[in-house]
Image (cartoon, rainbow, N blue to C red):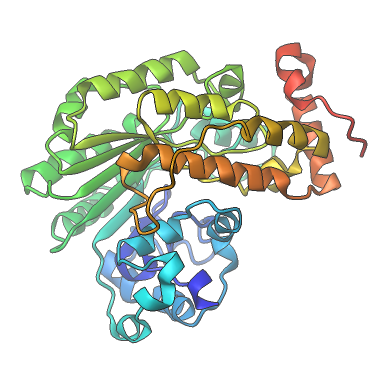
Length: 410
C-alpha cells in the first residue's frame, strides 16, 4: 500500500498559499486558511524553518512513510486511478523513485533517517486575477471572490496578497536565495504576471546567481512580457505553464474574461522569444465535464507546435468531473477519443517532465480521459451539472448546448 501513498514532498518542498498560510502540498485543497491554525501556520508569524521542522510536517512525513492514506491527497489518488501522471509521481521521480519499480527504487530506512532537506518552493503570490474561471475558486481568483461575496456564497477576503507584508516577503526571498542546494521554484496565483513581486523574485535570483535551477510558473496566457522573457532566458530550465482548456468557444465560457485567440497568439509569442533548450512552454488544461468535448482539438494544436501538456484532471467540484456527464454523452466522446493517433510509448523510466516526450505525454492523457469517461456517473451530481449549465445560460446557446445534448433523466 505504501507504493500508492509515499511522496517526497514533505521532505523537500515548501508550499505557501495566497494568504500566506503554509501548506503540505499544492495539489491538496487548502484546509488551513480560514481556520484557527491559519494565524499560527503563516509566513507572518512562523519562519519557513519552523514550519518545515514543526509538528504538522513531521506528522505528514510519518504518514507518508507508513502508508497512511491522506484524504487531502485525493487529486493524486484520482489521477493515478485513471492512469494520469500525478504530482506525487512527478515529485517522486526527482528522487528516482519509479511507480512501476517502487520497491526496487524506494529505501524506507533512508527516508526514515532523512531530515528535511528543502530544495523546492511552490508559492502562490496572491489571488489577484483578471479571469473568473468556472473551474476555479475565490482563493485563486479575486474576481470570483468579489462575485461570491456579493452572492453570499463566500465570506473570506476578496483580495489575498501576503507578499505586501515586506517583512514576510523579505524572509521568503532571503530563504530561497540562501537555500544551499536550490533546485526548484514554482510560482502561481491568481495570475502571476499581475503581481510585481514575481519579477522582483526573478531579479533577486539573478542578482545572487541562482540561475542553475528549474524555474516554473503558471499563467493564464492573457499577458505577454517580452522584457521578462529576456530575464527568464538566463535560467537553466524554465517551464512556462499556460492554462487553457480548449481552442474553441467553450474555452472563453469556462475561462470567463479570457480571449482564446489572444492566449493562443501569446503562446506563439512565448515560443518565438524563448531561448530553446532553456525555456519550455507547457500547456496546462484541467480536463473537466465542461472542456472534454473539444479538448482533443487543443491536444492536436499542441502536437502541431511540439508543445508538452501537463494536466490535473479536475476532481473539485465533484459535479464538474468528466465522469458526471450522462452515459450517452460519454459514449459519444469515447468513440471520438478512440480515434486518436497514438505514437510508440515512452520508456517506462522516462522523465514525466521531459518535454521531448510531448507526444507520448499527450497520448497518455488521451488514455486517461477515456478511463475517466468510462467511470459511472452519480445521477445526483449529473443533475447538478445540468442545473449549473442551465443557470449559466449555456443550454440556451445552440453552438454550446449541442455538446451536452442527452437523453438523461434525473
